[in-house]
Length: 215
Image 1 (spheres, rainbow, N blue to C red):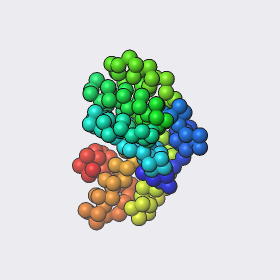
Image 2: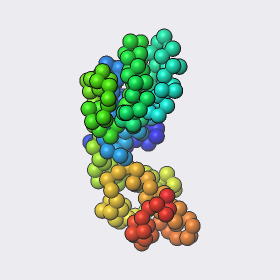
Image 3: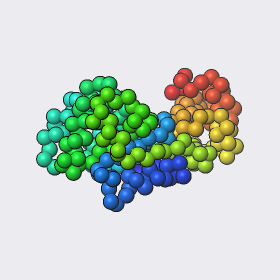
Image 4: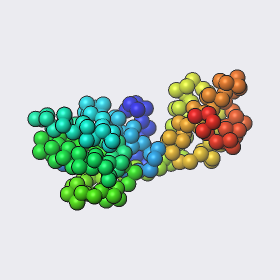
């Protein structure tokens, strides 16, 4: 989840530029949106490491809020999958946290699968504030990015594979970085267990049987 492990591509270039902008987050807040596996969480980790941000799960917002609002100087906060706060106690906590960070010049980075208007927020004031925040969307990875990710994931496990295997996988897995990680892990696990090389045949067996058995 570090910056060196993030591969820039047209699908994520705007989002990467947004979190690395020397001017900081626009108006102190940013919402990264995109489908599962597009790289939102990875970008959030990069920003959190660079800004020493506190990582808070939506379900923990109500519990964490008292400590956060006691800080006289604005904190830096990441909330991943922030739409999970909608319709829960976390929604009101997010509203108070947002206002506190704005008042104390803190920073807030949110990730979600969709824009804030589609989260189902019940508090009109929170909805209006988040809808007004800058949103940057990530697209699903294209073939070039997904191929580069697959090669890197295999290299990280010290597995040498052929270009033909990469092409085989590209034609059969969903356009998702999470799926790429899952299939590489499954191939590695099965190859070690059966003392077989990572090959197109092994990939075909795993994909035909589903990934859950090897995850």
